[in-house]
Amino acid sequence: MRSPRLLNRGASLPILSALALALGLAGAAQAGTGQPSPWQLGFQGSVTEVMDFVTTFHNWLLVLITAITLFVLALLVYVIVRFNEKRNPTPSRTTHHVGLEVAWTIVPVLILVAIAIPSFQLLRKQLVTPAADLTIKATGHAWYWSYEYPADQNGGFSFESNMLADDARQKAIAAGRPATEVPRLLAVDNEVVVPVNKVVRVQVTAADVLHAFAVPSFGIKVDAVPGRLNETWFKAEREGLYFGQCSELCGQNHAFMPIAVRVVSEERYAAWLAEAKTRYARIDDAPRAVAAR
Ligand SMILES: [Cu+2]
Image 1 (spheres, protein in one colour):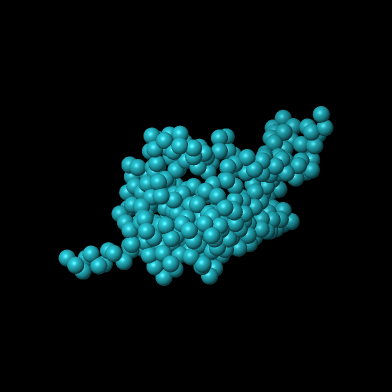
Image 2: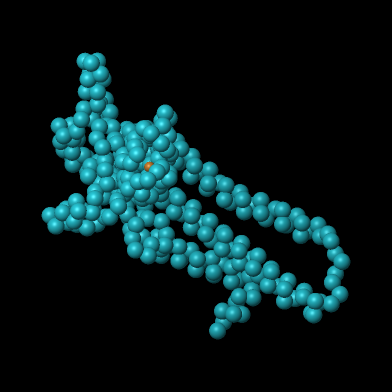
């Protein structure tokens, strides 16, 4: 009952902004980490510093835009109510007000500065790759991803990663795999495996058309362009399975080329690496085969 009165005062802005922020945060808290969840409102949960920053920045912008929108709405309502023809039959002929003009120039500039500073900080964090512990190359194909682990870091193999079809998913679930490990349209046959708390540099390119490599919980998204090598990085701080999707409309099966990254302990990574080297195609086999022809 007090709220309508509050609405007529400046005090309503912080309250409503806080409400919007709470809603946004609640959405983020509900959201799955590594994969989307039903009725999700906010971003997926974060497991990297970059995604933490993205989430905080997003919430800050939500507060700002809510305050600005409510302020403009309040002005409009005030003008409509106070200065309509009935209540204000002889309008003022004022056209200039120095104080007001200075204010509506300075205030927006300050708002833009308040947006620009964290924006540039975030850009820098995303674009400047720290010293990498591990490099992986991801190549987009129509319509799947392939990955290379370079030989000079104990890899030297490459593999393809295709989406699990529904029958394969059902079989996996029947065999005892939890359903969250094989979500529909996201689960793949061969996952990318990386160690936890290590800086992973991902070099991204494409073999045919434009694709984009994106994993929401890491806060990364970078174009995969044929003939060009793009780069992004992440340092996952929690073990788990994190899904992403091709994020550049690339053709008929664009929606069916998911990305799955499994973050594991250092020991499990070493074990996987040893096994992967025997299971997957060696990269250095390819030039030799060409030379033999
Ligand atoms: Cu694609």
